[in-house]
Image 1 (cartoon, rainbow, N blue to C red):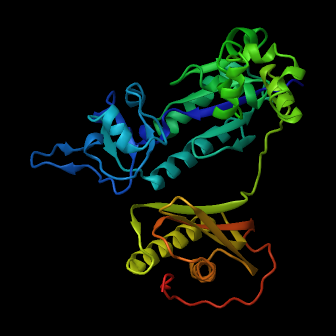
Image 2: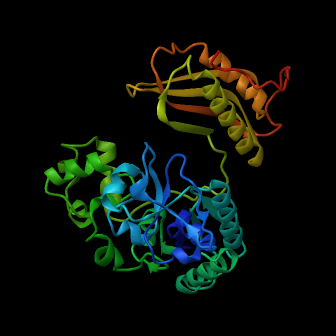
Image 3: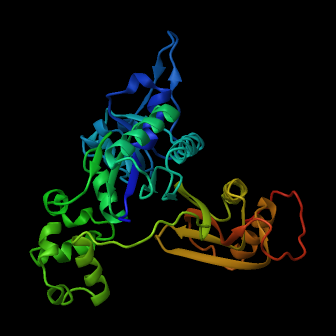
Length: 383
């Protein structure tokens, strides 16, 4: 049986969820993200008051943006101060990850009612195995889009092909709300004219090196002999690029998987001093531990390795880990391990970023237990 793999990608997911809450913003440039971005207020006459990107001051970055905002040159991961120069009049909204998680679960549950063989790739995208369905690809894709819309009120784009590589490329070709099928002849007609960067795994550095070789499109890459590519790239990577350019990808769907780690981090608006700002730093680290614990509990996971991440104001980043004799998902136990990790870091420079991570994960209750000591103290981690 030939494989039929779909890639479903929600359209401007975070922004679209916000537009359900603020429908008057449909058709306008809207940016989501930033540190300490305020939610819309309310005027005396009942109209909402929105912040503007041009008024933002700080180190925050864009989480996502509506298509209207993207047309002005802003995009995810761009600093908001730069975005303020490009689109000062765009509406700025804070991210609400709890709400995005809710809609993520809704759209995935809806898809599972039609096609249950799903590989979860993140909050807003999944792969779906359609190989065993009797309906044709187009009919199935439209059914999937319909159940997602019914369950969430949101739109998605779907690509269908014989493999994950081509389906992911295809789902992006006719956004928003598109269905793109890649069959016989479509590789040459629709994929080969695209820039090489459309292949997931060919990053900016590889693109620049390929451009220096006169290779800009996927079709040009497909026509390049392997021996030529290996003059610039490792044999393994060169072979993978060539296989990908020819649309060959045998990776199976990973229907069930346990994440390797769960982490949370935050970047400060100003650089923090380990001694003068220790109460605020301790409060932030406590909250990160609580959020990681919440993520683990929701996923029914626990882990034995707890780690921290600290980025200083000179952009040097250090990490420290502690492996415990038992698995944890409790915030108090995570905080205790974090405190031990912090003792091993010289806090001589101001701090730009803090992060907490739990790794060595498995389903809760399946890892051997040692003796656990609990307390309810909010630890002063930076004492």
